[in-house]
Amino acid sequence: MEGSECIFCRILKGELTAYFVYRGNGIAVFLDKYPVTKGHILVVPEEHYESVHNTPPCTAARVWIAASAYARFYREKLGALGVNLITNSGRAAGQEVFHFHVHVIPRWDYRRLSGLLSGRHMLTEEEAREVAEMLKGSEHLVDEYLESLGSEC
Ligand code: DGP
Image 1 (spheres, rainbow, N blue to C red):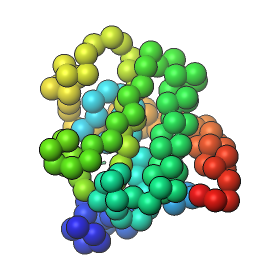
Image 2 (image 1 turned 60 degrees about the vertical axis):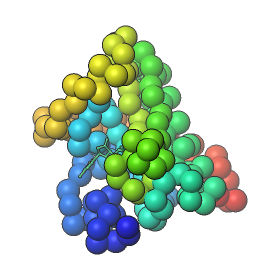
Image 3 (image 1 turned 30 degrees about the vertical axis):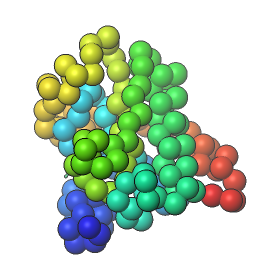
């Protein structure tokens, strides 16, 4: 499911709106429409691959390294108590959008993930603005992490 039918391809093409917090080096990062916690973002490759199982290793590495940069930013700059980096591969694993992505879910308290999942809400414009503000400056860290992969990837 590529191009016109893939929601994330449509977001990347500008046909659907999303709140982007990073775009470059073949990677895009935007806010999840149904955040599990404040700051829940999705790291995706610009190119369409169904999920991690058929994404070329270098592309997968770029997505994961960008997600790692956000984990660091949330933990060290924003004081998150924890961060979940999750990818779902296949419907049986809970995948709903079939364009490879890694969820970055900062944890601000000790509530269980299962409880947080059942309390998801639709992202509001105000929340999106707050998250964009929180993440100001994170682009440099993402660039730095991606550059560290070198010319091979
Ligand atoms: P997964 O289950 O891993 O395929 O997660 C897909 C995520 O995508 C889920 O957390 C909700 C999010 N999502 C679904 N539709 C949209 C959309 O139109 N815009 C944005 N920003 N996120 C979406």
